[in-house]
Length: 301
Ligand code: NAP
Image 1 (cartoon, rainbow, N blue to C red):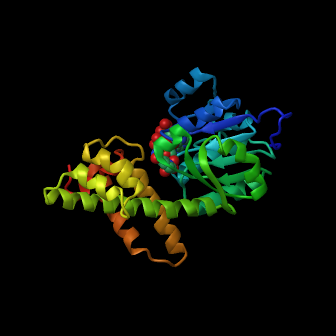
Image 2: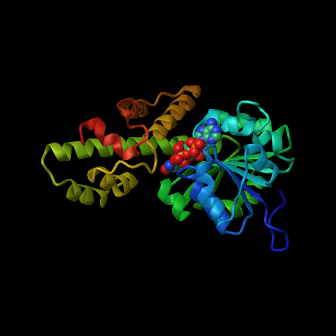
Image 3: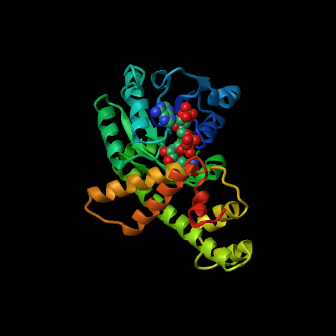
């Protein structure tokens, strides 16, 4: 992909994975004037973007054939491997259609080791890879205020930057391939532990007969405040467990973080406790609810 300047045509963009995050993110690229081709496993989810002017492809391979820069945003490491390497027949993946010089940008949260594996496979075809996971939730995706942590070659990062800046407010190159996902694992440790702290604080407030919303308001405004208390505690108090970020995905991210830490010989005891709580929530059948449902593990709701 050539660097963008005022005289060159805009690169053709592909987006694969139009879930809670991918759909608004792809929409921003379309609205910014990039010619967009999309693929989603469940085709019905492509309809809003097709109506807005995107082309719908039949496979990740067809997206890659039609694009200079290809974004992916799927659930977990095996899903990223399926869209890049091909699913059942192994001929419909990004790798089968992509041309040398193209860039693949992965916005999913996957294992750092998966990111480096995919990067090496793409490099064998002369294709660049950036692991570019995001944080900021569904709201950040819709408002294009995400924070994006990017691993890969710095020169490739700068080529992709104008597009990434359409998706987020803070876009930072954090190191080579894998560093973006490692940074995201650190982010997820913090988010999960903050959520467990929120659940425990609300459980005590409830048991003590305090007004939950007043308690939340005052503690959120001081040194104990957190994004979770400001954004997710109001939903938990209102009994609104619809997902922005699904509890099952948070559980996956804690697994990724603990595996990455173990590979570095590091024990993270509080992260293990948070993992236990999120696994419990998933076992309760709440994996598709929002992460604020963690309050249910403390008997709230
Ligand atoms: P989601 O709504 O469940 O969407 C997942 C997307 O991945 C769907 O488009 C799904 O297709 C696709 N997919 C999954 N497995 C696939 C496979 N094997 N082959 C092809 N497509 C596959 O999840 P999301 O909330 O958008 O999250 C997407 C990624 O962003 C995850 O890695 C998540 O951890 C991360 N993330 C999420 C948030 C958040 O607040 N939601 C924030 C930061 C990061 P179908 O439609 O066919 O199921």
